[in-house]
Image (cartoon, rainbow, N blue to C red):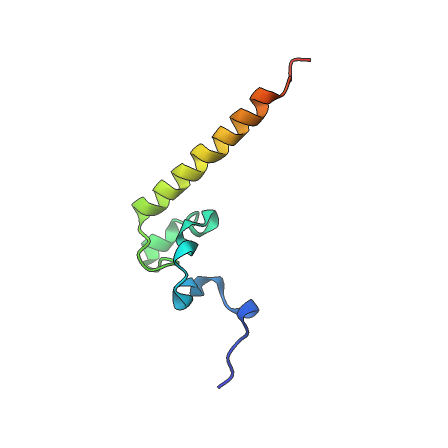
Length: 76
């Protein structure tokens, strides 16, 4: 039958294409309610995994922010 083009596929179809790197995307881990429903975005994703990914992003973004503002002279 008629297959939808790639650009109109729903974003929850990542597991259909077996894209394993999709579980490391920041916004794939922000909806923690997906674990309550029992429908994770990518097969194999769990609540602790998503919390760990969010923690890594949090630390990385804060490190970049701290490094950026340490280089600037904001007192002047």
